Image (tube, rainbow, N blue to C red; front, side, top):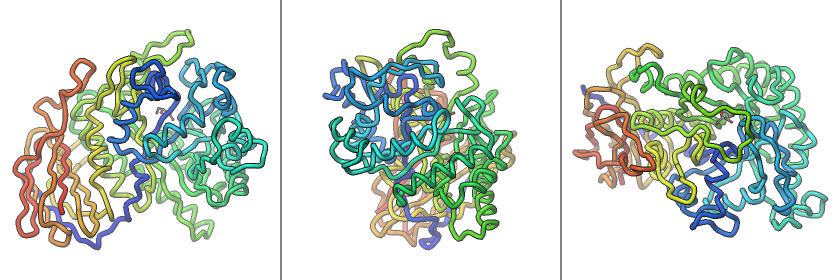
Length: 498
Ligand code: AHR
């Protein structure tokens, strides 16, 4: 099988906004406690943060980090998480049935982000709280000084405001599992009022209203319409959340998961534009895909320890990812980039231990899961503009998504360099791909890597942390503006040119 890809320099989707490489840290399982934070660990700094984890987060290249939830945020009392640590209360977290010690809070997390070089994206609690708590948190975080809450932040040791630009108006408020979940009508009204009040404090904030928790939610579409009818003029983004997994051994369908993400994005865009047109608004709502990943949710429902104990940092949602999972993740990132004109921000959910590219062992190592690689390489190599290539390739049949092209790809380019990211979804065949890069700054190949293995279910584990890694993409060649690569079956690859 062969494929031809043509790249035109003017086929620009959007200039690259690095917020597309965001991630997500929730107070859940061992993401924060015994994940990024472990004061007894040999690499811990004075705040208790593991510096070996910080190093991996930097290598991953995640930019904006959403915090502190997730479902957790719907029970979050932000005031508990600031001030002298010894005075902070221990609370029950109903979302994950765990104990929250509040030893990591808003100020510590902002300090951690300085180490990783990332931007903070904060969520407010609209499940059990409302406008007042949201405004208080905003004042505490962003007001320079001279008010009760900004002076409290200063007294707590943070003289400069955190200056948080992006704020989520609650989390998954359409989900019956969410503490305080609402109808679209109720939530739309609350979100609109909260947004209006927050923007009265700072017109420059970028606010994200909750969209659907997934495209299979019974209210999908209607939820977005109703919520935006209330909140359109007050918000900037609507959120999308999507998790994928292989089901019933149907690898063919699984490898085409990004077609569902494409459908999801198109539906939300057309719904948002419908509301905007009805309201005669000149504004376009952007999408914040602020939870996306692979998650073996069906299996967790059965296997995660469920008991009545209130535990600290239990092992929850600790998926161990395969080569096939990494290929799907790389393809989902291609789809996010392909829709970058509307998907202006995205957060891989999550970052450490909990459905995460980075794993840690208390007192021990931190290592990269298979899914780490496509994310980190894309974040490192992408630059300039995102370009939509034309892809001529045969399709294959899938039970879940119908016909799926065997190859998917996206391109980025600036005046000095370019990069092509590709997946081969075929389970059996290598595919030779020729890419017309004649309009790009491309006179030599500077890097050509692939994530591929004879065993598509190979994984990195505590015992075998480097079983899967990047390999050189053998045989990549560039000749008079034509790049030729041979993509192994079930693979994700990247070629950088200069
Ligand atoms: O990322 C794990 C959970 O998935 C989040 O807490 C929630 O928002 C979603 O259902």
